[in-house]
Length: 328
Image (cartoon, rainbow, N blue to C red; front, side, top):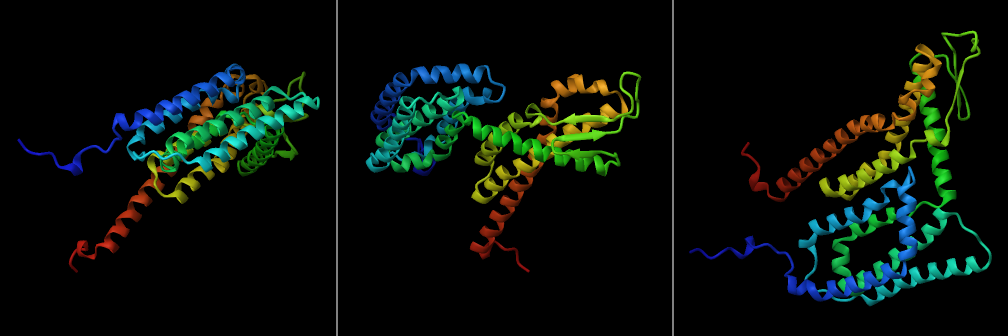
């Protein structure tokens, strides 16, 4: 019988080493869940009935899975980081206190604003519990999954409105540019695009077709999902921080082009087929189709980044080990 090589033995922390800090963390997390049960229950109901925030209930499960696959990187010597724990807990408590104070001043927040306050406070207190039970090294090893929990926080209404307006305006510009490239005589006035009607009727004489880019046409929901997808893909398939950053940033122009192409397609259908296409399923339910189309260039770009990273690693290894170079 051969003795196993210690280098090949899995390095997962032993259950006995995990048990005590995890029990403490579970107890603190359970206490926080009880204290914030009302707002968290309201958050689930709010996201369930929201077209934009419907992804929120999935975020804790994604975080849990990412922590599980990183469990071998956790430090086995869990040392409480009291300073970091106190800072996170103080920030969570201060945010909760600020909400109580403005509430006593008579401020009546919108539901998403109230949930943003409560959820952020809950996550900061939970972060403090993590530092207190697991320590800095363990929290650093799971920093990305923990940071991903920020997507549980609904955008406050003023911020959400500004993001929607940004995508409305940029999508209108992109669609107008595509129409001009296609040779269509379109004119844009703010968020309105006017097109000629090549099939005028008695009910609709040739006064043109005007498309208004409404907030519902901003594509903000699919853009948010694409952003989360890019962060997950970068974490799972890329090691270089700058490549992960580039993959996340490319979501913005890709989302604008996708939404612009959707408006361009609808415009061409209204002009060349029928203005009734504005009420067709491709307008009201075509979002997933264009989202799927945007995944094609996204994954091609991800593959290119992955290959460039592998090539860069190979060159670095060759420079570090010149003996591996083939003889000239």
